[in-house]
Length: 167
Image (tube, rainbow, N blue to C red):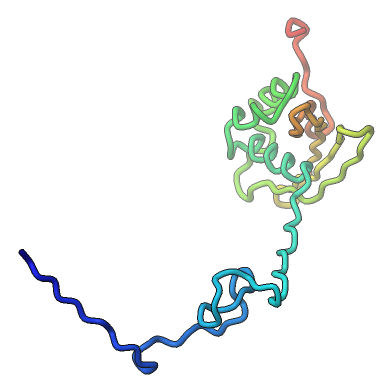
């Protein structure tokens, strides 16, 4: 039989760490020294953090399309973000590598858009590579699952030629 010896700590105020007196506690509640672990009725209400602004879908899609057309991302990265013939158009555009350049990477300089009807956005982006500007236009439509998908894309004002056998 083993005998366990225990010592009880003496409760001197000098041996105990100081209690926290910070009023910025999560939940705005009183410190443990004041009793109670949760917020009290007299404590001020905790402030809700300001809502973080979400980027517009046009900004997100312009960046995604630019990454694919410049060769920084594979075309299949846009597969779940496209609908209809837009993926086929994107594949044709990416094959030619219109934004693949040596030197500075292309960047989106400006984005504009209009809403022809609720749930549809037609957007354009000015893409700059060094001192050269190109135009990119695309259409976004809101699906039944409340996600935006690209349904059309054009680059540089020329529409990609479709093969009549694809119809």
